Image 1 (tube, rainbow, N blue to C red):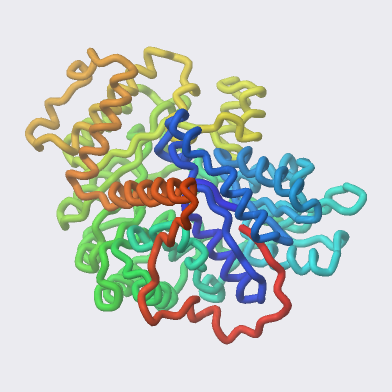
Image 2: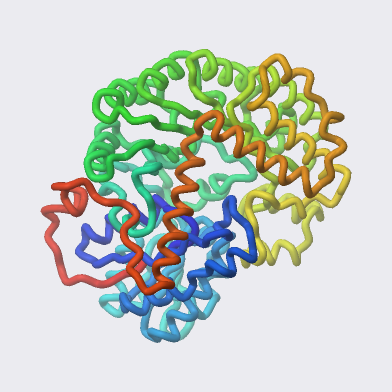
Length: 529
């Protein structure tokens, strides 16, 4: 069961289960106008509420096991699905995993509607959970898992190290998304797992510390050949238009990037976009990536105050790394987009002026702004609680995912004057990419200070959309097509018609990726993710 958007982790687990002979189906809600990322329009969300459709899918599939992938923002909604599903099927087993569950496993397993929780990676433990359910074994501990025994006590398995050989895993199963996602518009893929940094606000901050035994390498990379095999299959089946690499840092290995770029142009030849870190980018990589067809490059900046960045955020790049990275991208015709955070606890307000100077001189094509959100499990949230910046009551609401909205959480800032200042900078950051270069250094706070809070937010959104279309950001048309498809599907369902498929497979292609074939099938157990 998934809400909001495609998740590669679900695709990966589906392929692993299919390889073992299980039946897998997907219950999905696009959560229109309440998708926990961009759209938050309550009255439209109520009109297009598809909760009944999700429950109808579960009722139709009659699953033995229901699996849920939880973010903090989706946790409560998924708990509701689990509760209602157990009313329909009292014997169904529920498995909860995802980043939020890994942060609060004890709280999750205490819920009566939760039977199993997966902490950390589920590649090995999820199939083991299904084997235990098949055998009726509610005694033997399962690695990376907590579950309730017959007497209600919680049995906890050891936290194992991370999967080291990513090539040993089957390709993520995209076929489960074909009725729900326009896969061809923006093909999501990941070529590595892990990050070498433990930024205090990021889930990697606590995730890397989960193993209780030898964890092995946290940063692991698929071979170029393994990535290419997946993309070749995807290109044939879906006629993919743009490839979106979701790696935390795509450019960790320079030899890997060089080999990838040489092969990608010859074998795939589709535009693609990546995420990078300022310390893992240079002119060579910019040139290789551009020649291979890379279009957009996303780089996390967050703040331009070096002392604060090093000591509080645990980010160890300097301003010169950021400027050099932006200049390399602009030099070779890549389109840089950067992530910038407001409301970081303890950040000097002067850092915004420093950031404005850098952005005016080396302007990204998009400056994505985020208001600081405290995420369960992270050191930033623990520090905010210890310092009194947030109350225990508020922390409890975060643990439970109550009223959580990720990207625009201005409530964490009590100083209204500071909020207004951040909003002014936000507007300027949205204006910079769409005005002539000669105007950018002249843009000051006073030019937008007259705009009040409500209109400022609306103008910032409009400017962001204008910049996205002006610079041909593929995420914008893909997002619009995603919404149009689901509005169309929703309407057809209400009129009594079948909604149709989101993607039409290319003629003559296999129904499943080659990696699923030639695997001996055993008696299947039906799972709904």
